Amino acid sequence: MPKINVTVAHQLGQQAAADRLRSFLARLKEKHQDQVGNLQEEWTDNSLKFGFKSFGFQFQGTGTVSDTDAKIDLDIPFAAMMFKGKIEGEVRDALTRVLTRESGPGPQGSPGTA
Figure 1 (cartoon, one colour):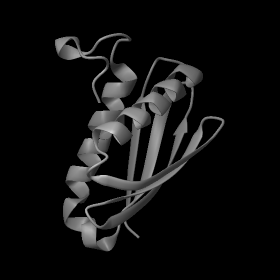
Figure 2: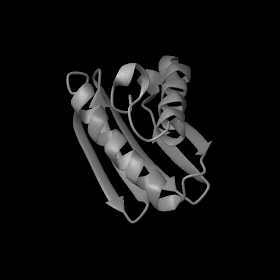
Figure 3: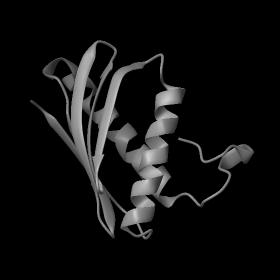
């Protein structure tokens, strides 16, 4: 199965970065509930195992958070290969935003945008 591997550096420390990722996933569930189904996540310390279905495709992945970076590895179905670049870019952009934004309100006064 094709894979996407994204690593983003941060200066938050392991626990703060993991906390941001947890809250980010919760916001994603709410924001994209019409596009993402059967979302499962399981945290063990600072490691994440997740899966979801989107637009008829099943995705599985893992995430790890260290003191200096966060890494997402995502298995994508062969049928979604034509979207690999777009998916990778979206994952990288979202992970970068959540790990580098300042605490507090995001742009336009909204709480930390996803």
